[in-house]
Amino acid sequence: MHNRRAALRLLAGTASLALTLSACGKDSEGSSQGSSNGNTVGIAMPTQASERWLTDGKSVVDDLTRKGYKTKLVYGNDNPKTQVAQIQDLIEQGVDALIIAAIDNKSMNGVVKQAAAAKIPVISYDRLILGTENVDYYVSFDNEQVGRLQAHYIIQELGLEDGKGPFNIELFAGSADDNNTKYFYDGAMRLLQPYLDSKKLVVRSGQTELDKVTTLRWDGPTAGKRMEGILADSYRSRTVDAVLSPYDGISLGVLSALKADGYGSAAKPLPVITGQDAELPSVKSIIAGQQSQTVYKDVRLLAEVAAEMVDAIFNDRTPRVNSRRAYNNGVKYVPAFLLQPTSVDKKNYDYVLVAGGYYTAAELK
Ligand code: GAL
Image (cartoon, rainbow, N blue to C red; front, side):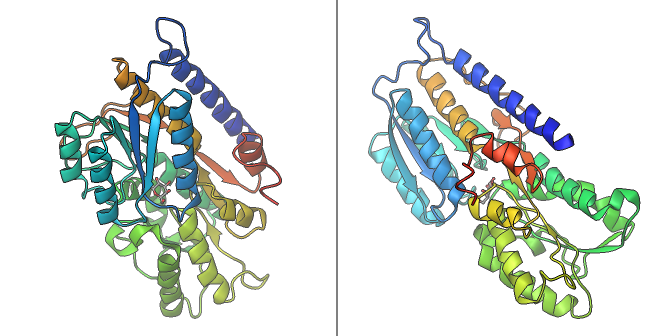
């Protein structure tokens, strides 16, 4: 019932956002968009190795194309230097706006300065660019809420609110150079900390500080290696009951370390393990009863908001934002539009992901 209500809320939110976005895109002649005036938008995405960013890139291109814009889409191969060079290239090619999902949020200062000098507006996509005034808007999800949803799932599945425990938990975070990492981790830890304090949750590795639990470039195998080390050092005569994982790729890396250590049998069940992005391999893993949960973020909406922002800027309208003070990049508050994430597990994936049109039932087979 709870999941169904959440899914309905999600669908209602989606519908009203789509309405708001298309309403704010109406120009005086009543067409559903502004004028593209032949403008070209440069889109810099971080990596093709993760499925979600392929969907992001494709969705942004589709939305802008539908509005009459030309697009240039590049992927930075998870290498900050490559990405900076690509953006420089886009500026030299004369793009009129930039949508950037940064690999390293602090490496962008020089290149966005060049963009500002060329009067090219910059939209920070999903990951906030830090330490510069030259970022105009930010579009993302409520990133602390992502962490809260992951922690809440662990609390619920372990029965901590009913007084069960103590349980062993291990903690994983994303890439240290991604501004979202600390939002996810802080959001989760805010809910988990009381149980750590009361010792109903115990981190046997002792690794709880953010700088001890990050995973460079969100890499699954890197997280898997860390998990292997933790199992060898701290779990020889114990079992781990839960793993906080911030992202599906990390969850799958951790899962393979667990399986190699004999987890996944009736005698040694897999721990509760969270995730994020509802990537196809993870949704399949959830259906197979391995990964427990993921946080779904409809990146089609993220793309739509980014495209609307660009269209508004080119047509002298103020882009629609719903948060002016939540994200400070160290130099200024960046006006933002934040979308809501949804927790997905075995019970509601069908309703949220299939009925919501993110995947077909055949894709999940
Ligand atoms: C974050 C993003 C997450 C996940 C992660 C790894 O910036 O917010 O949804 O995709 O990167 O790609």
